[in-house]
Image (cartoon, rainbow, N blue to C red; front, side, top):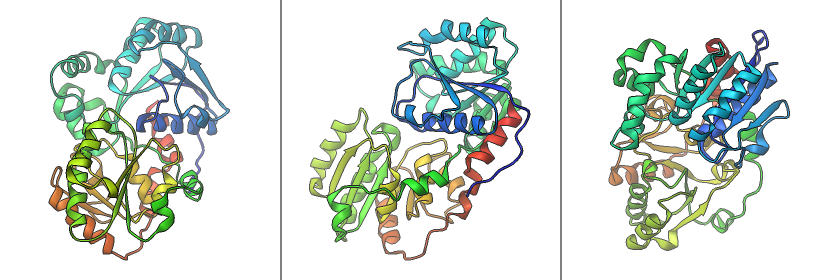
Length: 367
C-alpha cells in the first residue's frame, strides 16, 4: 500500500506539540515527522516535554528537541529561543493550546517561517462551553489568522471551523490524518494474550480510545446490555482515562461485569482489532477517528456513531460500515447485532487516501 513521489526541495521542518503521550494527534505527528524525514527533509520534533509511549516510534532521521517544560504555556520562551537559534523554514503544530503557543512563538521570534496549525477534533465541540473553552475561542479568533494555513482533518471539521470563524475561512483546508497501513498490517500479526480472544467460543466486540466523555462509552455499554438480551457476546475496551471509575460503575449497574473487560492502554491495538469479530465506535464527536481507519485496515467489521465529523467521510455514507445516531443505545445494539451476522468480506482499498506518503505530499504543498 506504499506510494512514492518525488519530494519537494529539502527543507528544515519543525513539528511542535506538548508530548508524545498516547493519543491520536501525537501518533499523527510522529508519522508526519517520519514521513518528512523519509522524503529528505531535515526534521525536528519539538516537544514541551519529551515523554510518552510513541517516543520509540520516532525515526532515527528525526531530531527530538526537548524543551523540558511541564506545561505547554511554559514552553513559549524555550520555543522562541529554538526558532531564533535553528531558524526552520516551516513549523507544524497540533492541538489548539499548542497552536496558540506556536503562533505566539513565531510572532515573538520574528523568524520568517511558514506556520501550519492543525485541529484534530470537531471545532464545534472542542471549542464549545465556558471557562477554558471560551478563552480558547477568543484566542483562536484573535490569533489563528497569524498562521499561514489552518488544517482540519476532515471536511466536516473544516466546514465547522469556517462557520465558527468566518474571518478564517480562507485559510482553512482539509488534510486527512496519515495511517501507516503497511506497519498496521505487520503489527496486527503479532500475538495478543486475552482469554476471550484465545477461546473464540463467543463473539468478541472491541472498542478503543481514551476513557473520556467524548467517546460516550456509557451508550456502548447500554447497547451491549441490550445485545446480551438477544445473543451471547463479549466486549473489550482498550484505553485509559478519567472516566474509568464511572464506567466500571455503569458496567456493574447494568449487570454485565462478566461480559466486559477494560484492559487499559495497549501500544499495539492492531493485533486486537485483527482478532475481534466487530469493532464499535460510540463517540459523541470526533475529528477524523483514527481508530476507525485502523480497524478497517485490520479487516474488522465496524459500526460507528454518525457523529458530526469524520465517520461518514471514512465509511463513505455507510458503504464500509454501519452508521447510527449519537447516543442511541437501541440503534447501536441493532447495528451490532446485524454486523455480527454479516459475512461480507471487508475491503481495505478505500484506505489508500490515508497513506503517509500521500498525506505528507499534501502537507509539503502547505509548507
